[in-house]
Image 1 (cartoon, rainbow, N blue to C red):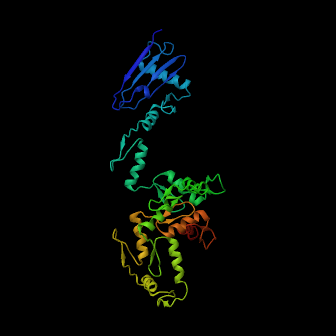
Image 2 (cartoon, rainbow, N blue to C red):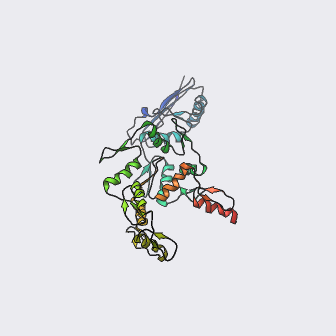
Image 3 (cartoon, rainbow, N blue to C red):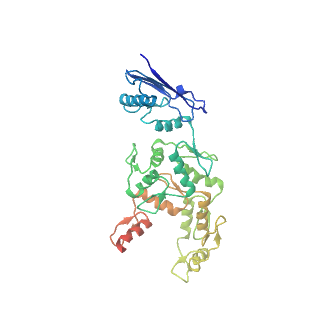
Length: 356
């Protein structure tokens, strides 16, 4: 019985054997040994079509179409199978795109930086980091995100959803990374050792906080006297010294202070004086501790660590806000309907319902 043979050759620039890419799909009527390579690879397609499938009067294109239809009917409509991971695909274009995950080919180059991507959709998402576009906006607060997956993850803060359940205790978490950090409590695992001493930590953020002892950094500043400390616990202990007699009174309000330096610092609230200027930008501050906190936005330092999940923050107020996720505390209460909120901006937005 005469067979019709179709052969196609493509350009190869990657040196990948066609035999490494394709699989044989065989049935009673059709035999195809087809290598579905990337568009710029040298691959060969051999399609043997039995006479009962195609007539001599059929064009090559018609025969090929009949073969495709027959393959889909006999393979669950997914004729393209990857030999690397056994995944199957209904469309060749999707198969070609998938193969790039194995070959490492990155056709989509960013015009702004040197990064390249396997998929065009990844490049589109990456470009938003250059344009600043954040199209996925939270309906509960003012935050916006580059990707929808990040928004979906963020929404758990508002909904209280905690899909990640600890298998050892009753605790549940909004994020998998929080669960992974929590599991160290049960396993006793402390994978983050200090390079300066023998201590080790369950969380990387806890190690970063500890390293300030060795580095000499003292990010925790007393608002009363300006003294700084390497750990927050040292600051808390120090603050107890200021409790007691407060003989320094502000002439503009009812505030009192135990030391004159505290009064001087406080007075700047009334005068508007901002002697502490940032060397990286144009901002200035009334208090040195505020400048220290601001500088972390430039350095990326995050010394305030959450004891529940290990997440770290650049300032203590952000840590306190974050802790509400774990405690469920909602300190911002609507004066009109008594509804409570975790964040002040959520309360402000809610108030518009009452004000119209």
